[in-house]
Length: 175
Image (tube, rainbow, N blue to C red):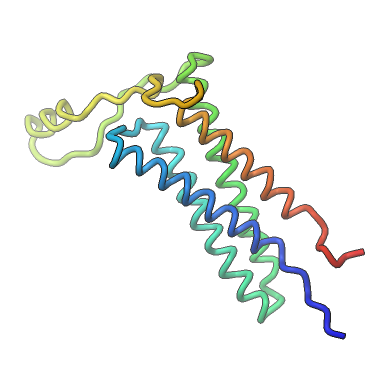
C-alpha cells in the first residue's frame, strides 16, 4: 500500500505568508490609491517588511517544489519559510510601534521625510513644499477604534502565530 508523504511544512507556511502579506499590501495600496490616504514613513517601513515576506514566501514555495525532486533542498525550503515568518514578524513589530506612536504611548519619528527630488535648489524646495504633510502620529482611518497600523499588527501577529505553529507541529503521519 502506498502512503503519501506529508506535505512539507514550508508549503502551507509559504502559502499563508504569501497570501496574508499580499492581502495586507493590497489593502494598504487600495487605501492609498482608491481611498486617498497618503502613507507616512512608518507605513512604508511596514510595506517593505511585507514585500520581503512576499519574496521569501514565494522563494519557500519554489524551494519546496524543488525539494520534492531533490530532497537535499528541503532545508533551504525550511530556511526560507522561516525567513518569511521573520519578515512578517518584523512587519508586526513595526506596526505595533506605529500604532503606539499613533496612540501617543511613545514618541515616534522626530524628523521630516520627503521624497527625493532632482533639479536646482528652488525647484527642489518647491517640490518638497508641495508634498502633502503626512504625520506618523495621526490616525487617518480606523475601524472599531483600531487604526490601520493596529489592524496590521493584529493580522500579522495572527499570521506569525499560525505560521510558527505550522512549522513546529509534527507531520501528520509521524507517530
